[in-house]
Image (cartoon, rainbow, N blue to C red; front, side, top):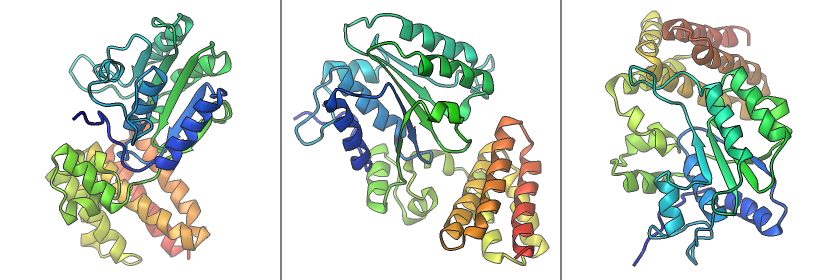
Length: 314
């Protein structure tokens, strides 16, 4: 018995919305798929792309082609001539570059200028908008402003940086949410990751982040953030020092530390809109750490200072 190649966990309503647009014959040429990292946005998009390119889904899953489907096999192996997936590339030292290069976007635009090799659609997946500089974003606008026929582009956003209004206004948007506990455990089980209560709690509905969260430094950063938040508004010097030191270990530790803080602030804004300005300022600091290559210790100090100022001002 064949199985679905890429099972979907959550996001059923968003999938149904897209498939309804596809069935209507009036499919928009550009879609922003946004939501926090690690919730399965890339898988969601890959499934939809395979269906548009001709994969035959199972009866139970309207976008879930079986693993022996020839189109799906080409898509998964990056061998489909009418699908182009754009991500950050490796530098000369084998590490991921900081941004998606503008030349990659120009290649994507050139890809869209060609006729489909198999006579159907041409699909581009840009993963992600958060990892693009201004030059790359301006290059994306070329395709969005002058879309060729039978062309579709998916723009994945992890929502860590604001999307330019000129881009958002030319796209349809699907907002995906973090997974519930049951869905999270299913994804962790599929990937072979032990779904302990501690791991489930740490990933917060974003099981795709489990691997990066398993290191000792990262766990220490998450625990330090939680200790800091519990101690607010008057953390002692030891808690403050530990928080900054743990967050400053490396970029991954900082991202996890910042994620704990941002999630906490977002929860606060649900009951008190006055926290929104602190959330925005914290988000700006996190974006600056990546986009301006701010040292992690400087960004961590700014983030902790932002929290303290918010409490002192209340």
